[in-house]
Image (cartoon, rainbow, N blue to C red; front, side, top):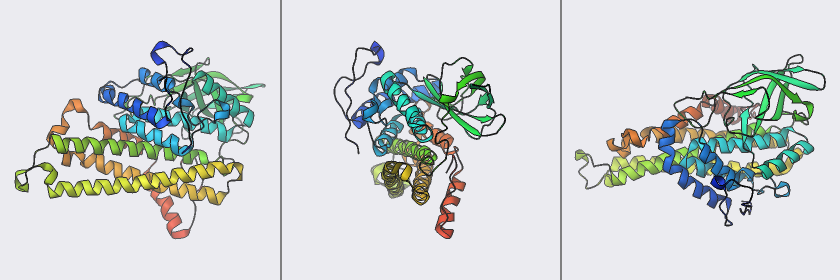
Length: 408
């Protein structure tokens, strides 16, 4: 992991979002925040909406600059460290981990699709102003069109599943060129005239990700805001963008699974009563329950090993920059797909079966322990696991790498 620490100035921060003054490692800061977020996670899950105080705490922490190189004002962390922070946050609150992880995905998008002048300026301003980035890219939703207007482009239309758009300072936006049908990606300020973010996210999981809709009504986008050099998925290196997205999701899944495991363990040891037929003094001695925990642990250890291996590979691929080859990118796609499937399947298994080992008291409504399953089930529908497994199968049988797209 990169050697980084946080020691941020207090003078320009509002009192309620001032950073922790002492020097700490990013993971220490993340654990401190996670402990705070976990205390209100169940209540906020019930409420939904924008977790404003918690997002401001992330701003104040300095972690929004985690993946930005130190030369541009950031902490210069590698991907392994950034993904570990995502996982730590997901153990406490997967919604906050989601918007935090996607913030760093948006920064990576500027780096991979934009020119050096573009991403350097965006990195420096993000570090200086503590910008929070939101997502309005969604390549499957093509309702937004870019109309040429001479020296600029006019974006009009809608986007769905725009995670973190509310309470953001910057957006990554996509549109189809109205004439050429080219796929365009731009970095624009959230508060620009014509951008309207709806508070319409009310799904049963990931309830504080603000993954609702954004409407663009004759929004002026300058040509220098279009990330076209080298542009979307234009090279093996630029094609790392979807893999970073998949690995962020993997670590969110793992964080949810680890949280469900720990909650189940607490209730098994402290609340659950042994079934009379087990003829044991405590639930922790029940052989059937022990067997289930053994299965849970094996699944978690396997998924963690695959995720950590994939993160190490991503750092190696990232360091290759434009020298990354299609074969190297293909190897990364397989490693990340394997980790994602393992994390999703293990997580869904634990989040479903946790009540078998935790006992009836764990279903009390105020605990909202069902949120682990709801959050993971919502997130694992991001793209179908069956197609991810098919990609792995194509390699296993035919030695064919996944075809680069925004989902593989």
